[in-house]
Length: 87
Image (cartoon, rainbow, N blue to C red; front, top):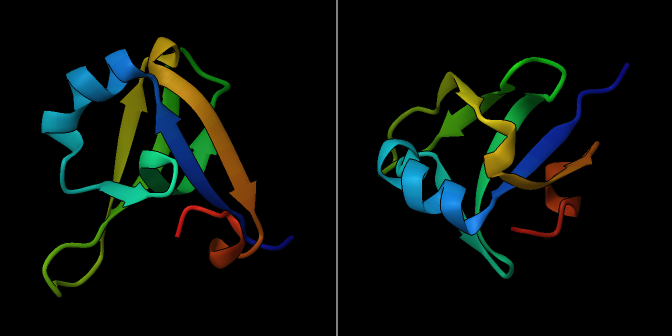
């Protein structure tokens, strides 16, 4: 099975509350601020994601995050990162 790429858009409340913690993982695009993820699983008590931190030409760091469902506005997936539409 091919890999998928995910972009997770937070609600305004989610962005307000989580931006200080996720600042190095957040990206800006035509639709606003989003979280680029290698994995996204809503099937738990929290929305589980594996997000990539890319900052100042440093190596990419992947970290797991567990985000309350109420903070997730939309998740978009694609087999190719450039086709997600946020980049």
